[in-house]
Image 1 (tube, rainbow, N blue to C red):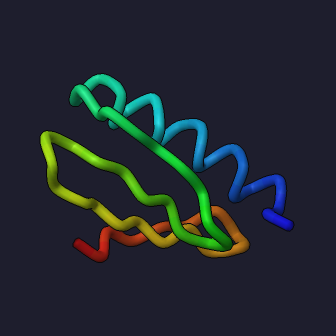
Image 2: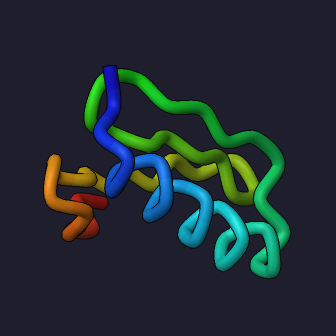
Length: 55
């Protein structure tokens, strides 16, 4: 179950990525997966809300 910090950060990042024309966004554990023009972008959100771009 995501922490409140993860949920907030997920919402913020989804808004940012939506502005970049993301087709799909879904959450799996601590990672957010997105599909941007056929490419996958992986962002890991830690329990404290901090995040890092994986690729």
